[in-house]
Image (cartoon, rainbow, N blue to C red):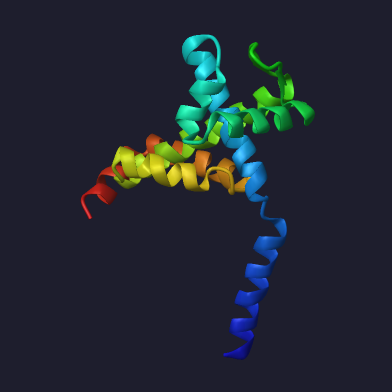
Length: 154
């Protein structure tokens, strides 16, 4: 029994060692929001980001400055916000993860609102290998609709 508990503790320790910081998760959220806004409206403003992130405008400004310093976007106060290639790639990766997870939850029969909420909670924390396997599994299930039907009838 003791070794089982030890393995679990080692597993938790390893997960926290490799887990990204809350800060990088927050940065990814900002990049994702900026990308969505630019796609939707052609531009993103501090006020728009503030509204979607539920944070104050000064908090957005601080994060935009940080993202700029780290090379994820080009930000000039009172001017436009442009994602760099580095920032756009991260935003696109998060959007892809989001889509894959939503599709998976849809197959499971989870309602859209719940699926979207759950996705926002985990999309930043999954290993790319896990996402790749989920994509393969979804493709397999879609190629075999009878399996999905049988699952839904459980």
